[in-house]
Length: 290
Image 1: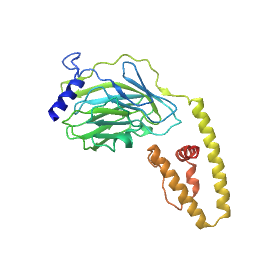
Image 2: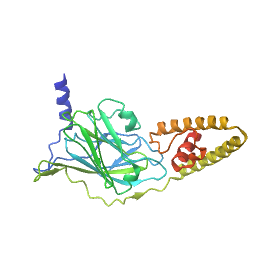
Image 3: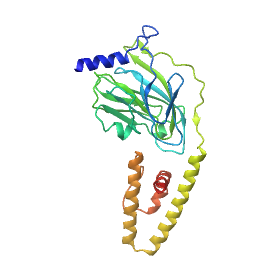
Image 4: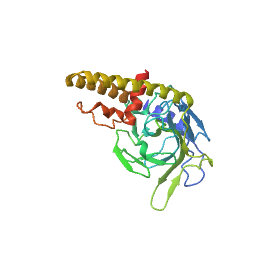
């Protein structure tokens, strides 16, 4: 049964086209397995996410990649209205046209056979090239101009490995540049060249509707902060600590929903002014909107 399954996977992912002896074959995004808010273009090498949301941006490689085959993507466009950077990873599961979850982390990573990592948004502004790969020992690596990182995964590198890219958060458009694999110090193979692109990297303008929603949410946040300040001035220290605990709980829930790393200390007796940071203001505003 397993042999038949492997044969089926092999037939679906086999592509006889090569450009030469050192060609790994074409590598694009899988046209049959994309997130609900993703549009593919440029020969299925460019993935663009709807600006009105930070999620539903999953895409996969069109074929399995080999261990030590380094996949290269470029973040082309970003939107500062959101938080978080692109997510990257691998899976032993063949991508299908079935409904995909909104997020790579945690929706996919909670399932066996999937592994993904977030690239910090400070390390992937527009124009950044991110290279990631799996080695023969199941260690996943990624590299940006700012840093390199690796982590041991529980994936089986002897089985087919499809690359995962989650066009998440600030990252709104990603271009798949291809892949390279070095066999020795003399021979390096690469995937087929992608079509030439004149697309300009940079930042997107915030859509009017999103800008309007943010303005309303910020107004609600300001009113809430004023009410909270008035309440704190008339209550004793014990009540203030209780309100602070309540706020911390609500903010933490919002971070968990959006899958954003906590960038601040959650000591319960710190001033509520801690919530003035940009991250907290945006997320709390989104919470109040619900």
